[in-house]
Amino acid sequence: LKQSVEAGLGSRLEEGFCKLARAFVAEGRGIPILANLPLGSALPRMLDEFKTHKKLRKLILKSCSLTVADADALAEFIRHAPSTMYEAYLNGNGGLGGGAALVFVAIADNYAATLPLSAVSMPECGITDQAAATLEQLMQNRQIELVELNLRGNPISDEMKERLRRANSDGCVQSLQI
Picture 1: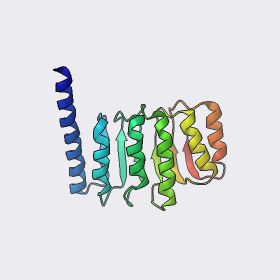
Picture 2: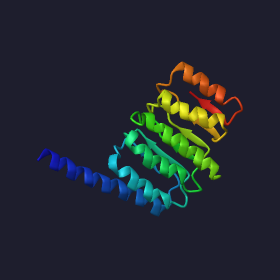
Picture 3: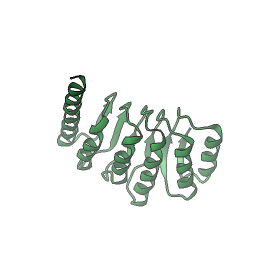
């Protein structure tokens, strides 16, 4: 019974989150703020709703319990973000961890497509050295260019932080915060 109730509640929550996303799109709000919402399986559907948003300027998913499993949907959205979106705030999604590598590659793809994403904030997202190594490679190859990238509060080693600073020596990220 408990599993049945949780499954029913989960599907109603997912539908509610998707209705919320549709409302943001319909109202034309440029900055939908979703914070402290356990999006879970609703994330891919919500992001699909936001793809049609003609005025989306910022994607704000703070402390939404995003995990490695959500990284694919998030990366796909960033890769093909609306041309009006220039900032993404993913703060406090500690379960993202190694999935951040997919997000970094998507940021590079967004840049290669000359889309305007210029600032990404990912503090306290559980970003690992392995994910940071993907970012390092993208920076060394000038496949990424941002005005700001905030990675504070992640379990990135001091050695990797130094490697990221060296990879950014030519300023592909104007303000790198680690």
